[in-house]
Image (cartoon, rainbow, N blue to C red; front, side, top):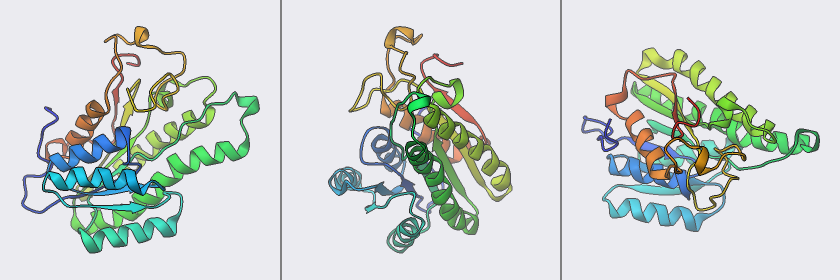
Length: 256
């Protein structure tokens, strides 16, 4: 794996939808997949300006890109997004479920509404988008789904019961879909980032338990969104066709 693989050796263009693609890891993934030869649907929930900036960068590479504001929890909005994407770019054959929000609360103070909000964005959103994408993928006979999980979903974390549960559920969904669709040329994997340097930075990163710092990372630094994107680019390529149902950590050795 070099992180610079062309996504497909065939002449048929691959169309990728990246949720939460306006900034940070989502933005880096969208750009990396475009560099690998895919056309991109840049999904955001509300920030059209951020989405257009990412789409402009993709178009500057010579790839096609469209933007679409849709809340991944809204099945009707997601269906409309997929219909628009198919009409303008073609069937979605690559899906990256990245949409998430960060939140922290002690368990006694965690409201049920906040619990539901986190699970609905991370887990329900992945369910709704994956179900829509798999209709295209099964018809084409090729597909890649990558779920952006998180180290807390593997290691646990204090004050993040809702996030840990959602990310652990995403890992479980990855395994179930991998087994169900493997024979149809579709792979499903999860990427589990640790401490990643993002625009919002700090110990409150969604992917990082709050007690971790750079000193606790064996490689003595944070990762970058581009490093996460490089792994995703490999997993959606033809070169990774024998990898499915896996959760690949990218955490500098914090969780082994």
